[in-house]
Length: 266
Image (cartoon, rainbow, N blue to C red; front, side, top):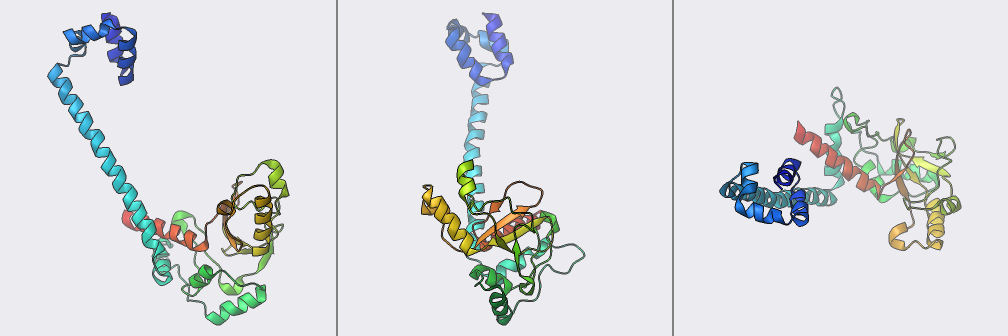
């Protein structure tokens, strides 16, 4: 029996005590008569102190986790209410050291209107608000985030010329192979980012509407497929999957959180 007690003590896993006591009920008596204390070298008073230390440590974990969660929520909610004129300059900390700024002079409303006329489409409102603060942006090296091209350089590009023609527009939904084949292929896309391995682009509203129609026919609900309109995507050209963004605004907010984190680390 002493061997069982010693083996259990050496195991280092608290759950083994329960297992062995259940298996070898005489261990209970041995524990109560002091054999366990003799083997482990811990008196009852020391064991009580050990238990209190563990209990206090466990109690301290919950507030720490809650505080971290509250800080994250405050950060997210804070950016949600931040105006574009404050939000966009936050990214400046992500610039190259040798550059003065990531930002570009703002686009004029007339430049945005001319681009919309040229493209034959009304650009998303959040993207236009970004352009009115900074008409494009430099590459962000510290987080490998692409820069953005000016509104004057926007043009429709085919999925084929970008190497995207094998992708279907699944809007980020999980699909089986048969469902995936029924979805529309990437057709024309509007690339917002500059030339780099990381890209951000829009799928046009017509293709999005067709994808929603197919997905709803397959049983997806509105909350899953979302509303018709432009859909933004982030993609790294050496990775197999697309990352569907909730919105362009949401993507910029995520960059701002990274910028805040980078600023705190300096």
